[in-house]
Amino acid sequence: MNEELKNILLKVRELYMKYGIKSITMDDVARELSISKKTLYQYVTDKDDLVGKFVDHEIEIRQEEISKCFGFGFNAIEELFEISIFMNKLMRDQNPATDYDLKKYYPQHHQKTLNARREGIYRYILGNLKKGVQEGLYRKDMNKEIIAKLYLWRSEDSNLNDLFTVEEFTSIKLFVELLTYHIRGIATEKGIMVLGEKVKELETAYINNL
Image 1 (cartoon, rainbow, N blue to C red):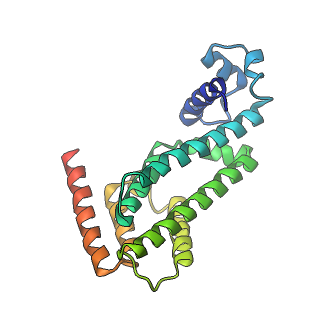
Image 2 (cartoon, one colour; image 1 turned 60 degrees about the vertical axis):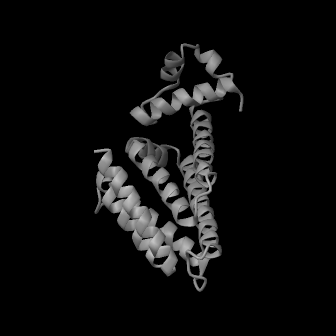
């Protein structure tokens, strides 16, 4: 992807996240970029193509960002906290109108986003489980594939459940409870000790930032 197209998609991302997808026309995009529609059409064929490239770029950005969670020598529990913090931030920053428009008006692109997210979460959690077992933080006697799918199922079900508002679902209290619920079910005694230390660290950091 060349730099010119990346710059276009970054502006499109800004517009979509703020106003949703349906209301933003090609004229709006060209005007915001201070270019002509003719120039814009050198990079995309139509709005559907633009939305598709926006989706591809979003998937790429998320993969790059989440990969950073694995590059700092974290143990499995610390790594899981970093992954979850990243996902929590994504939910807070997301405009519900963008997801709604994508699902209603561009279902093929929405499905691509959904598939990429599912595959990514499953892969990351499965890798995390294997790492935790090797480090002695997670139990050896668990079915890692089933646990990874349960984590994915629970995260999707919670996201779609209207029992929680976005503010509640992304709150520190619910965040800690969900991770504690998940980790205590798979952790060894050593893992539970590490979990307790991590929860205290996170809660202290939260209090200090108030």
